[in-house]
Amino acid sequence: MIDGLVNQILERFSALESELADPSVIGDRERYAASRRAYSELEPASRLATEYRRAMDDAEGARELLAEDGDDAELRALLDGSRDAMDRLEEEIRLAMVERDPNDSKNVIVEIRPGIGGEEAGIWAGDVYRMLTRYAERRGFSVEPLSIGDGDYTFSIKGDGAYSVFKFEGGTHRVQRVPETESQGRIHTSTATVAVLPEAEDVEVEIDPNDLQIDVYRSSGPGGQSVNTTDSAVRITHKPTGVVVSMQDEKSQLQNRERAMRVLRARLYERALAEQQAEIGASRLAQVGTGERAEKIRTYNYAENRVKDHRINLLVHNLDGILAGELDEFTDALQDDEKRRRLDEQTDGG
Image (cartoon, rainbow, N blue to C red; front, top):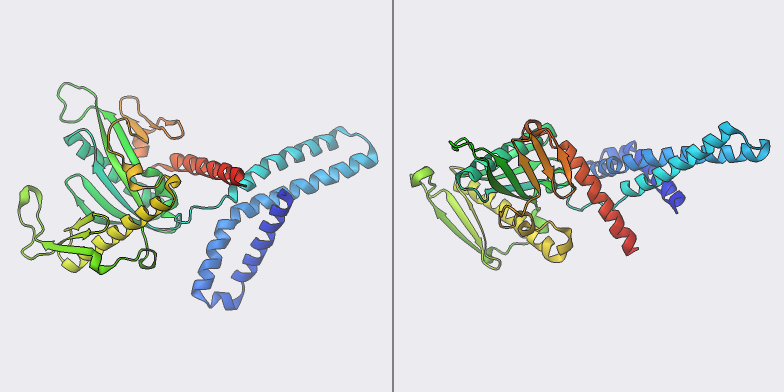
């Protein structure tokens, strides 16, 4: 069965290479982009399949020589090593070919809110915001703030594969540290909740304008003072679901409305996904929870310079680096864990 999969991978990869060199494909922007994306997605599996084919050829050659010349220690070692390589590569190939989350290539909208911990929770929410935006910039994604204020942060992260990276940040982030305002030196525990929503296209979410209640009002800053002399702030309520989105950061009512619709579309898309496939665990409620201290995906402990991801029991002693956006170790481990779980589900389903 694995031999057939290896052949299928190599044949498909060769066909994609030919497509990318075909002038008719190169001249068709959409087709070329689709072929390029498929090529990039299949390239890791193709490398493994090539390595597997080489190990299989080595094993076959060693078997033939052993049959002709009798037992030989060097040939026996080559045969055993080739078989071990084939066993290892078989699992790696299956993992590489696990069906991707269809949303992995999408841009994302991220919402960060203070959880438990009062003023310190608001400060921590800002730290989480800076951590995630720095990580995005390190990975080559672009960040667009949508609504920032009072400890609440809504922003988009754009770039191919953004959701495949940032979906693992959804949930409750717990911090244990001595707040700057703490005079007795006591360690406090606070939380911030993060929701990561795949950004939906217009064609993916159909919103009936008659289902929307749109209110406009004057933007206000801290303390309630008016920021604008015109009704530029926008609040959109989706009446069938009760979802409410407010935007007031831009001076233009049109810009605030466009941003609010983007967030609303993402929330409704994610809501529909959660209803269709509750098992994907990506619903906003599952990610955010209530912000209670026990509902956590990750704990950041300042005194011990450590960060622990509770989903995969990974402990890293590099707090400063992680807060500066060095989250790759967590992402890589969580992506690997997701692939293994998906492979188990496909095996059980098959």
